[in-house]
Image (cartoon, rainbow, N blue to C red):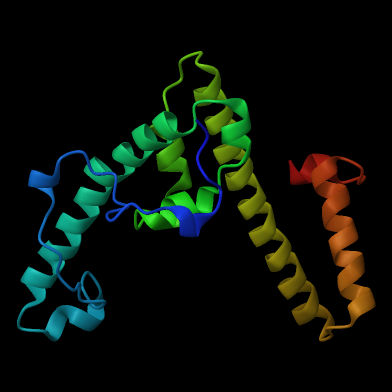
Length: 176
């Protein structure tokens, strides 16, 4: 009983796994200036700030833990876990990928095979995304310092970065 990897086949009318619909706040538009200096002159600043804080609390307290429970229930076998599309699962529930670590923290540490594998998949996603951002930063710094965006130079930056991350570079100890 494996989930269909085809996202269009998901006929669920409400992808939010929140198990407590009675605690679900009414949907409302959030002010993007809330909790910033831009919003301090707005006459409704306290209401906007409160709305964002409540939405964040709902996300952390209800949505992310429910998503973790849902993943553990949905992906019970090793083959199902391997087919899991982390990004799709998170975005179906309105959870940004920046919360991967929090989601992983809600997957139980018990010895159930699918829990271990789900935690491993989430950790791989975290590490991969982190390394991607570091590589982008290395490339930007190289282009700024060399005042160049030559393909050959960027290839050398990528090769050096991969050597650093895999332990093949002389300065690997400085990186790790």
